[in-house]
Image 1 (cartoon, helix red, strand yellow):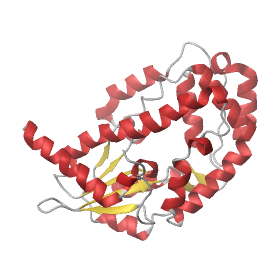
Image 2 (tube, helix red, strand yellow):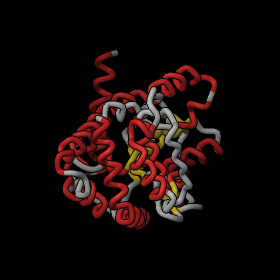
Image 3 (tube, helix red, strand yellow):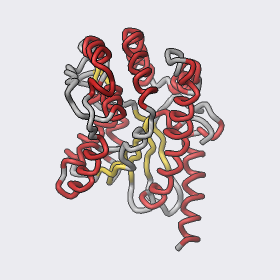
Image 4 (spheres, helix red, strand yellow):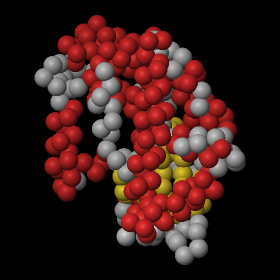
Length: 288
């Protein structure tokens, strides 16, 4: 069994390297969708997604066809799962992990919470921040990062969520590769300074999100890769004292280490039946 799994693992590594061209860094073609094929194995697809999109957006036709030709959908995470009865115990663990004995006014700061409320009202989704909520700063920060989008754009219209809804409509299984536990170790002082950065630069950040969506819709994979692979560009608004931390978290932990963990799962999943694997586009770039 171990020898067989090792063969699958090596085959998958070669498949992904050959399909996406990310072994040499920059993408070889201006696309985010790749077909994975190997003799004797089901044909599957690898799709780089964007977690935000224009409100009311629909899946591009070639993404829709890839889903229709697949028996199941694999995504990074699926928060909707936790509402299902079979995941009740895991949902309870997640809720306990996110809960805090302090209020957000105490952990984040009342003045900062007031400023954030003003900033977030300028985004698309109305987010009312209750300073009396007892939520861990990392969980609060993750919610803000996920939901803060320009007017006319939304996390709910991101490629991942569009695919999940379509897969459910087609009664196809949706498999999540992970849960969002990896942010719970982010130091609170760095979270507070990251929120301060959002307060100071929120207009520019919203404008950059629009540019990102436009590049993705135009299949500008090379341009997106250039931005993602440039830490100075990615962390230009963060305090200098925090940049090394966020660079390690974003590039090493969130990209490289997660890719390695996902490969172990995909080795088990892909040989079974045709599959559409949809993960953030940044995971397709770089040598690892």
